[in-house]
Picture 1 (cartoon, one colour):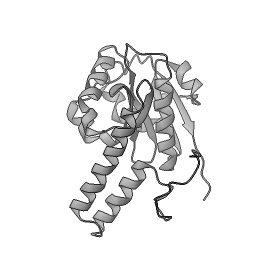
Picture 2 (tube, one colour; picture 1 turned 90 degrees about the horizontal axis):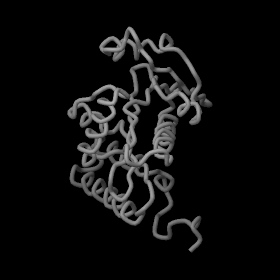
Picture 3 (cartoon, one colour; picture 1 turned 45 degrees about the vertical axis):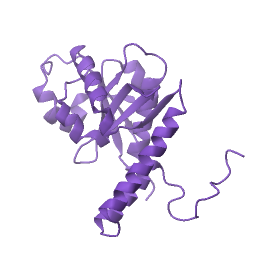
Picture 4 (cartoon, rainbow, N blue to C red; picture 1 turned 90 degrees about the vertical axis):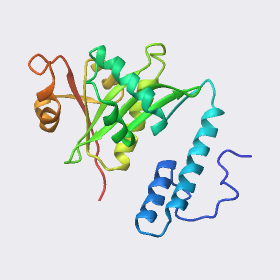
Length: 216
């Protein structure tokens, strides 16, 4: 079958071009509008998870970047703890990861989480790439770039105008399309995290940003 051929059993309609996350969001909206029962929402969620799990299982030996799930929490927490101890990221409590699971993307290989990052959205619509980390056993194979690219696409779907990162690896962010900026240009970040950071008076991180424009 031609790989570009339309799915033969799908009825043409509003949902045909939606990705998995968008399908779930649509189902959740219908549930909140009392047009879809809790049981029906659960059936849709189970079906979407089954599809993703099946596709992941057939993609052995290859990396897959996807939305994080609650079943990834332990792996995410271990990854965050490792890089926090290495001084690369701020520590995050396990409960915080659970509450913000939908902000995370993970890179998976052979059913194992080998990388992660979070897209944290501030009240103004400014967003930050944070908690970026890749397994120390499998590095420099494109996982970090793939995760950041996934999150930037998510930011564009949300019509976020600016995404930034504070990093000790500026070359990496320059390679994935970010430009240098200053911490002083990111006041919300400074108010939220920098004031509580032990290195706030001797910060060795570089600020990088990427900007998007949208047609009205």
